[in-house]
Image 1 (cartoon, rainbow, N blue to C red):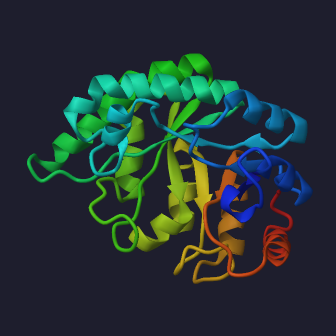
Image 2: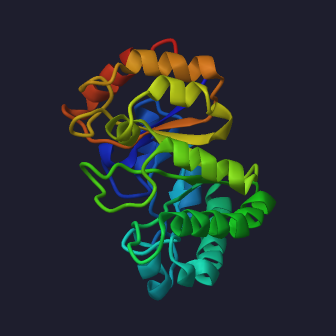
Length: 266
């Protein structure tokens, strides 16, 4: 069974108060990807007190110059991030260990037009291969995320799960997997159930949202009952994190989500 992680944006309060709020609504995990600027000791105390885990954080750096190169307008498709990426991943993995987080999200950056597409592919593989031992040693998994370019992330390099899975196979590390975002992949390629079930061993994290509008599951065109059934049948037992907005008030939204996943874990 998977574990449902609540979107931090759904909950009231500041960063630290959201963990108690998540517990109140019956969630075992919470997803807030940003970690720079957070008091890690205070955050860990809130995690321990609530018993609510933080399901993932994003690869970031406290160095503004490095952070600027991590943004999607640049990213690991560029060779000049190669050394700085080690610094950023070390920082992020250290934060993850402090917070008890097991998944660190990685993104590719935007497509380049000065080189062949294969060069961008190779650079992403090379960068993640280099930082994989940092994650392996810490017991953390880096999860690489494809994004859609039709609605939300025009120009982003890594779009399809197929290329993402190919990259994961090339990197060949137990500490590097794919982040399968159901919302993004429905827009980009569809075939959600087959892509999840046929590649579940390569998936380290799942994001949830419906299409169109990126709102909570059950409000759009995706048959989430069937998707959740397929996720469970695949043997996936990690986090499914709500990374989406709400179309209703929080109480109703949580009630509807629990009804939707009834029998599939929460």
